[in-house]
Image 1 (cartoon, rainbow, N blue to C red):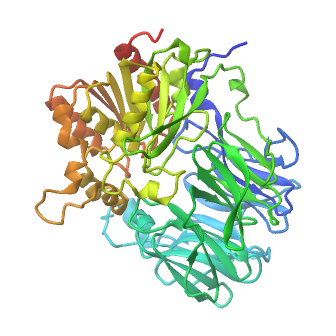
Image 2: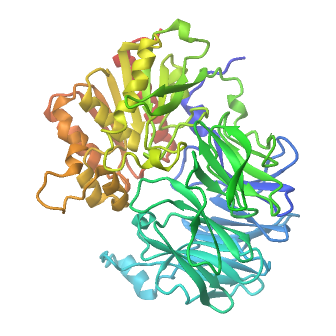
Length: 629
């Protein structure tokens, strides 16, 4: 029996995250949550599976609170995880034995634990958490005597929890800097930490530091500068480590793999010629990588200073776990309905979970891999999704151009189920969907990624149009029934597109940028935004590069009826971006609908809001493109 794909099936399905493998490779743990949140606080559960048995995954914790971030104890006897079960919204560290029993809370008090890592001795855990609020802090908050003073930082500090006594010791070695991440060595008392100057998220694009701390002596053993603060660290041995980090600072660049021994003065880049982009690093076991290349990913191992490719898999790998010896890996794969898979890194993976059996009967739209060239000859790729049971010979189709976020993003060869980029949702309604990967994304190396710095819109929009023209020429896309849409950077590209051409009959601008100058003032990652827009506004009276790249500057050219959707609590792309563009379109007589979602940040988390957006997509297309036939 064929199952009709409904909006409820999309947002009520269970979504796997954070797969980790036990030290001996026998078990896999991961967290599971519904795509759409029904309540104020998220609910998620920890699941366990046998790594060698298909569909063996079973729920291990209740899921009545937010249980997340599982990590196995070094001896494999217990599982650590974070949960707000004691006080909703305040996350604490818990431990539960794998042979049964109740979970034990290991920490208490506000503000809770940000992240953790068990130490190799099995008796301690490294914690990252901000300082507890003082009585004066709590009084001020209760009485609303709480002005926000810029620079009054509350950094995360490095702490060590003694499991037997539950005593917590705060280390002084990192000083007043914000400790972003911690990775204990496989033996001994050393741990690598990523240090930011402040807790501001903007530090992902600013200079930072990687340091190795002796947890027993409370001293920094060695340190290296990082050009940017977004870094993952794993140990290659007791005195050598590797780092997955941006190639250069300032935002919008590719990632590379760096290595260093504790006695070396600098980190060495070992992937400068890589044709893809390292996306995920297994930090809990052997340091294996997932590398995006084209529309797919492959697993790789560092061998003699080089990344040696292992098994290749269609689509995307964003998170990766590995056993201690690297013989077993676990990941979430999205080529089919998302599930957890595990197996040898150089062989076939087996599916451990079956989280969405209700989707088994859905007739999906046929998905085709595309390749074309930009006007300047650059090789590009993407996906075409056709309505179920249809082929190219049935064209031309009303077609939706779908635009991904980032720009450092990508459409991998994955089933397109996301509420923000709902390719299958639209295909099952009768529309063709073109998922384009213009320059600026990942999967093609560093130069491809950073080629849109200070040139968004101008550099990448011709890539998109070249692919669209090809689909029109091949009789796939009906040139009189075209729409476009996307989220985040895809929302920006949507706004840019409707100000550069009048060929589209409908547009959905989701959480998109309309003015890059305002982004530097209001976004929580202003350095990154300035790298895209090309200027800050304080260089002088102008003209400014960001005005040349802002859709708001060209709003008078637009004619396309546009749906603008945005979260009201968005700190990445503030809702003022949506309101400004809506005002501009209205001022020029363009039909526009502005929908804002209360309580929502940069991504919609609430179930009813996701349902609303999915339904608005179809309603807009039906009204503007007509019956898809």
